[in-house]
Image (cartoon, rainbow, N blue to C red; front, top):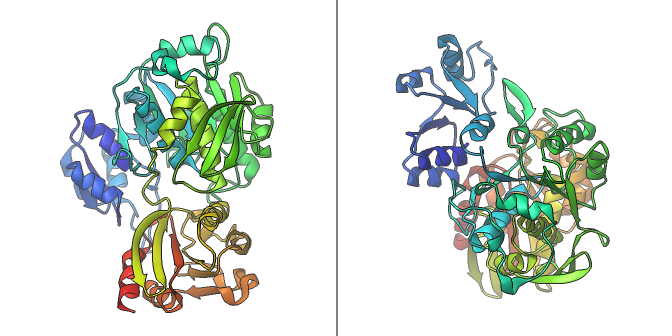
Length: 482
């Protein structure tokens, strides 16, 4: 919603917003854009008399224990009969019309892959618009309208490489500017229970991966697969009157089931040995192969197999709008990642080595495991990984994936869990880790325990999809005072 507010502001609208407990980097971005942010959802905000209320999916018709509405502003909007819409619908009607939309979907890696794709197109001169669920460090904003045109000249003559796909290249050349959007399967709003991404109507759809998540709204994996197939249904077909492309992770059986249900578009795959796009080499330095032929090389600072796969997906998406894999690989060498994706928040020097504190958005067990694996591949012998995490997402709060936590943390040397607000026993869930796991129910106690256990050469990774009580700065201060 913060990115959407930025787009509306750039389009010339006067924008205000309300929420509770907004934290960096989004709070900083909104402040820099001059967007007034009000705390809470008070009905007194009707006095602003906006032309439209754009409602995020955090808003509901819920009531508190005393019977009062949790979101009184929404109740006042309904009572007064004022105009309102959802964020995805507003985007579809006012931003995405006439664009070549590249939608990046998946349980993991949406934000990073969206940022990668936008940066590749920017590097190629296409000036894309984008909406990312984070702040890409190459742009320093999470969203912009963009101004370029999709055209085949985006592929410089000297960067000859993979074919564009026949009629698809011609069709792409005839549409408007590119817009890259993070395509979430979470529901749209309390009044529209469809997944957000069905509003976006992409011409290029990336299906990055698919696991069970969002246990608060989906009963099982099959229910999410159904939503992904709804997305596939919105992509144009192929042939003389169609130019749609679906880019799919060939490693995922769940995505194979999605496409088996029906697909009308050109399909490009990545990930497996027999995929269209494959990688040869380590995640930080690898050749990109298209249908078995080397078409570029990516050498960058990112780590982890998951980021290697993200890169292949982004390269395949960019190819669909005329950017060669060679140009895309060169662009990724300058990709600076997204804030809160293994972002170094500080280093404390000690005799015998330094202690580094990272901020990462990982919260699903698979994301935690891949994040730790990527760091494990990079650190030196004798250096340790200390994972500090809070099960904060709705899925994790419900305990739907608590049994996977020991697996996700298997490569850590020590794990520290913030258990405040959980309705399940974190100590019991982490018992298989033995003495390597520690559980604390408050932030200050957690900081003190981590600082007491840290030693030179440690890498402390703080993982949460929230603000985590400002733990990063508190940890750095505690380590400096130790």
